[in-house]
Amino acid sequence: MRERVLAIVNLIAKYVLGTDDAPISEQELVTELLSVGFEAEEISDAFSWMEAVALQPSPAAKTEPVALEQPTYRIFSREERQALEPEALGFLVRLRTLGILSDAAQEEVIERAVQSAEDPISLQEVKLIAALTLLSNSSNLWQREIDCFFDSDWTRIYH
Picture 1 (tube, rainbow, N blue to C red):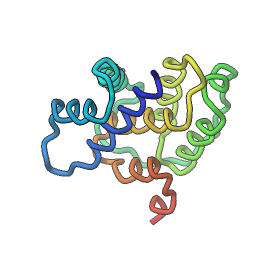
Picture 2 (cartoon, rainbow, N blue to C red; picture 1 turned 90 degrees about the vertical axis):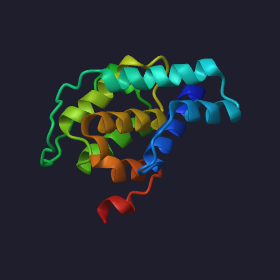
Picture 3 (cartoon, rainbow, N blue to C red; picture 1 turned 45 degrees about the vertical axis):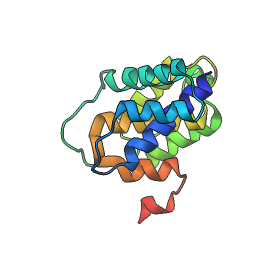
């Protein structure tokens, strides 16, 4: 069930990021998701999860962009290593090293992932949590980077 809810979150995120000026209708999203075979309860769970992640207070909520500083190195605790699959840990390290996530944003992603972990969190789940964290902290400032890491296209980040 969790995979299906995350698939819905992924589709919603792609739909939202794919629209430039057109208003987004929740009803339109729900209708489209129902038509491709998702159940109403799963769709509701996905919206609830996204709302919970977006409304969690950010430990470093700032209104203006901050210049990226030199990356720091973080040691993951045993609980964090157990809650995150190795690919997900590597992905977080890569985002921090590239300067896409600040230390505070990385901590926020890790905290949210560990809190929601019933099973080890996969790479795709960490991508969703990171995208939602970046979106909730800085609206469209990181849209290009989010598109790049959903598509696993690291070359566009450098150019």
